[in-house]
Image 1 (cartoon, rainbow, N blue to C red):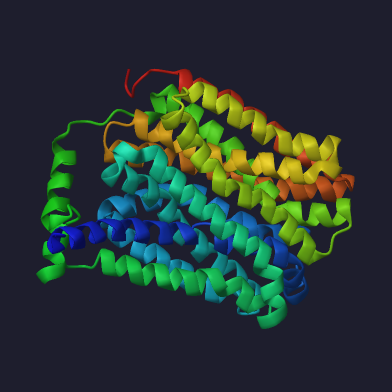
Image 2 (tube, rainbow, N blue to C red):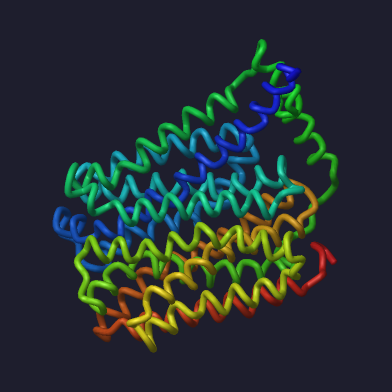
Length: 419
């Protein structure tokens, strides 16, 4: 016979993972839905190219500039409550962004950026806290979920806008999906857990009581002085690698649809669907990293080299053989999904506890996203001044080269903080 309490406990054991993946669904889609709809934003708000590019660059800039503040907020509130507030900010920001005014568009975009910053920091911390022994698998699953959402958002933005209007299409992911994610998150991590549900959660090892939070903070207070990550070479190498990757990713995400319109003569809808290949391939990429490291036993260095070469194939391919854009998008998409997982597997493996994970993740994301925010603007500026996509994609290639060199160096380094 099946032991009913045990079965129910197993079910509860899956619920936090579901909440975790729902959060991942919202981490990029509210930003990715904008590029296919940029002509509508420009026409409605009378924006030029640079002003329009800010709608995709501002969230990335928030990821960088607000991460130190968010890091302290997460430390103060705890991961569970901070994520709840982050999801609420995404919902409100998504509504403000489509109110039809320039102040509303930019204010809403900043709120979205703030909310997503909480998720960016909370996700690797949750993995480090609850799933450290399955870091590659869970990081891969979350990255794949993010890419599923981005793929759907990119491919459906224009068709949905034709039915319900560009404003509702733009707000869909942040409000509807964000709302569902918030409800599920509050069910899994309510302010207080009592009764039968609390007993089941304790049996499943999921209780996160106030007492456990206090004990964790007490351990941090008595752990002694923390080594400064600013003197740790690996921290800077990972920050540089993440900078190159995210700059390339957001530049390609922002401008690939328009590049396909110009280079291949596609309509806006066809270009949005075509560009979604890059995001769709990213769904498989994270599991490629898990397969290489856990399944095949590849070293981090060897895995990093393979991922880097595939990433570089996209910008070089578009420059040299634009007719092969499908192949280049597939290779680049696989690599962008795989690299995110690879880098944060390195972070999880090299940090000794959750607090060190928080501090290293905050440093890497602060630097990386601050640099990445220049990607869409720089690529758009180069295109506007040279009237060609080749030089613009060479900007992406240069960023990928920086990524390859620094992530390989980080994978090979064996130093520890303070050494």
